[in-house]
Length: 303
Image (cartoon, rainbow, N blue to C red):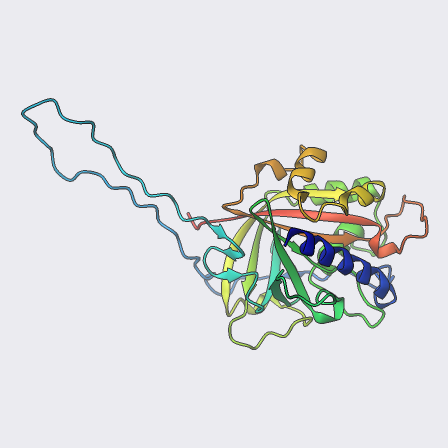
């Protein structure tokens, strides 16, 4: 299965390069889409998973030296199990999902809708083509890891990670940032609150914009950004070798970026491409494939 998975991922990456004409992430008119929200209702409450502790309710009297009494604490239910976040958002269900990152001051950075699909042995080799409108997840060292497309097509179509990529690469006036400016901006996301909304009504359509001002009409999970790394162009060939083992690689190569604090029981990682920065010199690589971004989330349990 491991060999099949690596082969499929390799073919997928090759196909993404083949469809390079489809993307134009250096579109000078592409601006990040954010929403300024004015709360109009109480946010939907997230289910709290309680840990039960069994404590004796009466004093026990013994006529001889008692055996040690232990307090039994059940093993907590993982907040992330397989591809399911907090028992509700399922990254393998095929149902559309959207991501929101709270930038503070009422500003929300949204994704668009994408079908949430996970790796399976019978997957077609072209399953992750941009036009399919999906995010594609797999498990790495017990952690769910999701590939997401970014960039903007010549027709203006955006993808799940497009707004995040533009936010990291361009200033509010549309000018392209330097690599170090983008790294600082990405690291400033650590500690921010994020949300994943998954539609269960059938109303959401992959590749369509998600409007956070309308709220989430499906399953909603609250997250915290706990890790971020911007993989520069010169490290991309090594990075691309790690479909499996990427968590360990990031922890080793970016020890201060937060990936060491992630856990297979409560965390989720997303990988995406980032375009060329203003101070990077082109070597002929397609601009939208120039760098890589990885962001790590921890699921909040509502407490």
